[in-house]
Length: 312
Image 1 (cartoon, one colour):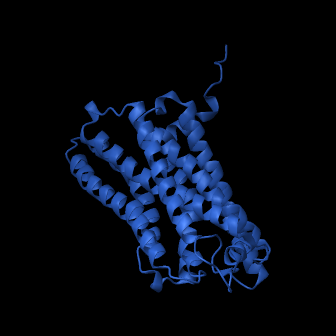
Image 2 (cartoon, helix red, strand yellow):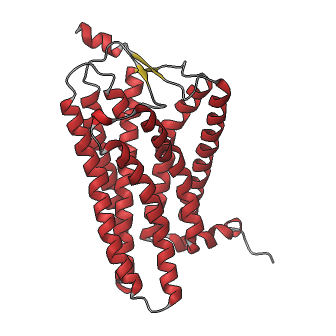
């Protein structure tokens, strides 16, 4: 009982990127700009998809869901990271607060990766047989809800397993948020079960969806090459290349961290790589989809006129 109380009373401190305040401020400014950009960009995509009836299709339904996930996902990490950048890591996070942040990070990150896999399947169905392409609204909602439910279950199990461990002694995290592997390194006890769980979760949310995406894109490329018109091929490639860019960034960086033995984890490299999928990818998503998707780009251009009454 005493050990449990001692563990619950622990506070974690985040190790700063640099001991030099000026460098910390530069990193803060970069992170803040990316965070604000991700909020504005993803909110714009969601509101555009919601307001414009011509975008009420499965593809844009999943894109709107991805935008909402990215807003909450980046907001799980960014505010506390920004505060600690300015304070040189002096603001601690409680044991409960760290567990809560880890849960939502894994939950929303897992749902994000699963949703990207669903979007690849949607593109495959649409390009393979565009004339008979019909994913009903109910099925789309079920797929999106399934991503959330699976992410919730995996995050709950993983977080409970990790924070069931005793923590003692050193409590400084070489990171800017409560990530799975840096926290696991602070535990004192047998972590083999937790490491196995991390690998299992990583396979479920990274390897399996990425394999399905890769298979889907093999069929997608084959289907695109059969399109007779050059304009049709260009439109199809433009739609899919935007999704593929996001996929490679997201899955590539996450796999580099989580699909490797915990013993070979490098805290400094892990911190730098995780910047990509916590700050860079959320701000790139709306930029890539708006610039590479002609229909969405055209809708954004006429956005100020939507809902306005015609002049007499």
